Length: 560
Image (tube, rainbow, N blue to C red; front, side, top):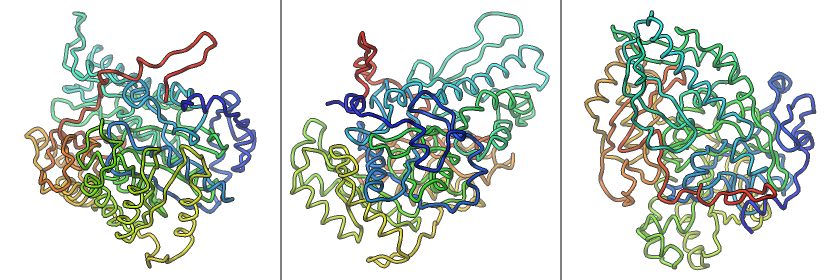
């Protein structure tokens, strides 16, 4: 059966019952039908004195174009912990419509390890991403309206982009204001995908509605003739934007197919944004359960680094353990095996590809974190390949667990659940690792270039960094404006440690090329765009949308 058929044939529990599992009553949730709910803001006051549970971060080796099942593993772990009697909760991101209709086709797990209702979550869900799109584009319209009616703020350059939650490369560069009306000035403009919007980042980094409004007001929308920053609050835009986001800021409660509670909220990409669910959702989950399982997008060089250096720093939290997801097919892919040969046993290619896994393990240990490698087992994986991988990981003094959540649900993740409990419940474990002591990649006091170069050299293993003239000029401008102490969010390809998606050679020497810099004064970080990465993705030659349909009975098919 397909993922959507498995989900459809599983009877879900009423959402009130799921809420009760984590101590929430009917008055503390806002129903969206029988199987979805928003968690009320009043809950935060009711649980503020509760002790926080343990935080488990799920990340991965550098992925292949079709993904390695990180969300499937996250769900499996939550169900596995529930199977062994632990109070667990998931804290995941909301899927963007871009990948759903693009290359991946869905982001709610797979097989027996899914969050549900999967069609709703993958499509419009509770409307959060649409609200972000509306708030983003409201600000854009207010900017152009202000210019049209006299431009009292003397806006000279507009930096704010419109957004859309779909992949559309035609919108990367556009001409706007071509109506010929008086006072409308044509200009070259561009769109980003909604999950790369600064408002998505703000929603995920704000810790309450009051801070949300403040951060929205601090968004830079452009510059005046003297080079002075102009903010959204100068347009009196933050109030209306907050109104549009008043429900979107509330986390969404759903469940896994095995009825483990799941909070799904926020959805920035990790290759072009900071790649984590909301701080509100994560901290709420940590108060409601003994074990919170969350994930950071793509490989650990992107999602985990940003989770730790941006989100953890802002939220003042840290993971108790990190799970590094691997697949044998991805190891072979990084060893040079073509997609059409990926199912063939090839230990020689794995010898080369395993270096990618080693680098991610090394990086996570640099942060002072405990690591377990999770092998997401596929049916074509051979015993010889699995045994080879187990031996290689153990040689690195790291535990490995074979996870079969896709085929077996929580039953297939009992081993990793037990390993997580063992490693997080003891001050020292069998490898004599000490309790977590989170070490950031850089200090906020360091210069912009110094921070970028520390990420490039210590996390990406680059020899150095090269900057375009435009990037150099923007760095100097940001320094003159006094925003040097912000964290760095590097936007680059997820498929390689380098900024070249095709460079899968872990022994190659390269430099990271920073072509542009964007100051995000609302979200509170600086984006450095590396290589050819775009903040508006395009569709593949055969988009997943071509296989998505609905029958006469209203059943959706093709989302996987």
